[in-house]
Image (cartoon, rainbow, N blue to C red):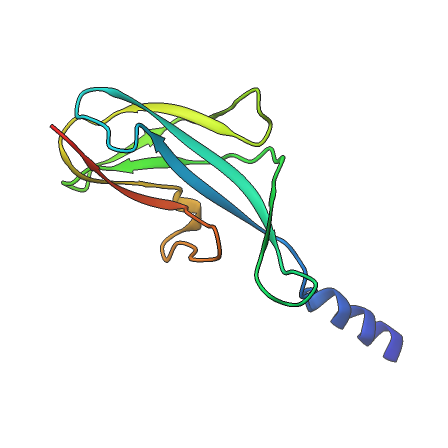
Length: 131
């Protein structure tokens, strides 16, 4: 009975060095203009605690995950951005035309509503779109 309880406890408690999937969103150009096409990039990675217990070591993640990226306009309208894996197995990209100027938000809603603030994570990106 004790062996069974120990095995269940070992499975229930994650290891301290366990990795968590995180993502970084970016846009090229950094300050897009309204009405022009911008490239949205997504890079998944694993975070591991270092051997000394400090945070964190980032390792690119080769995952086949259904990422969902959205652009939120200054008025709150949500548009989906289709991202596809590139020839680089650690990078995904899509394109988007920002229809108007103002403060836009790019996000992966699967990391919301609080959005990760872990070391290196950028599942939500706020940017200023120029006229």
